[in-house]
Image (cartoon, rainbow, N blue to C red):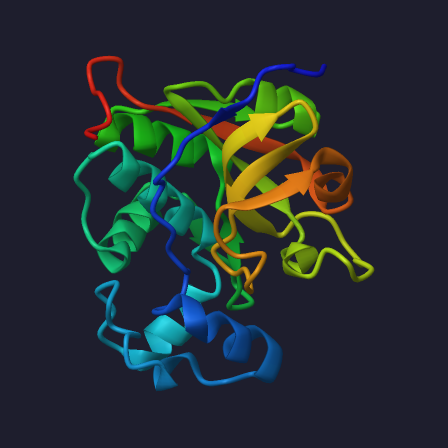
Amino acid sequence: MKDNKTLRHTGVPYYSQWGSPEWVRPIVEDDADPCDDPAWQRSGFIEREHYRFWAQRLCGLTCLESALDFWGIGHAPRAALLDEALRHEVYRMREDGGVDGLIYRPFATWAEQAFGLQVDVLPEATLEEIAARIDSATMAIISVSPEIRRPHEPNSQRGGHLILLHGRDPDGVWFHNPSGVAPYQSDVYMPFATVARFYAGRGLTLTRPANRQVAR
């Protein structure tokens, strides 16, 4: 399905899943210590190991923060959001020390209860179908490979990372990538055909409460 309209939310705040956007490149490309970033505590983390473990996994919560702040919906700092998400089983710790998550349906239930959002889970949808759902009150989070930060290079996987779609036109989408490297970090425009190389075929939409307008 192809939508012939152009709709783009402007002014959606961009956040890196680490402390500072400019630190993404050294962290993901040069294996820099995330705690060398002077702003590593910006999101409310206190313990270094806790931050090192979780920051690389919080792409989904970072996307949520961008949407909530754009719509003027109050929320706790990211570290406290993580605590709430864990309580609602949005992330689940594995016996091997790893993490399963962000898990869509628990996330949807939590986001609806905590922030009044309408969240539609789309476990099987084309990129064009999800993009067509973006409207004046709706954005989308989709699963892509983190390799989308280097779209001109070959990718080895699909999925494993989340980005926030905040606009679309007949040929592509605009998005924020919480682990992106400039120029593919914030307000990125990319054709459907390019994004599709990285897209895992699933995502969800976030719709703001009907009685809330974005302040301008």
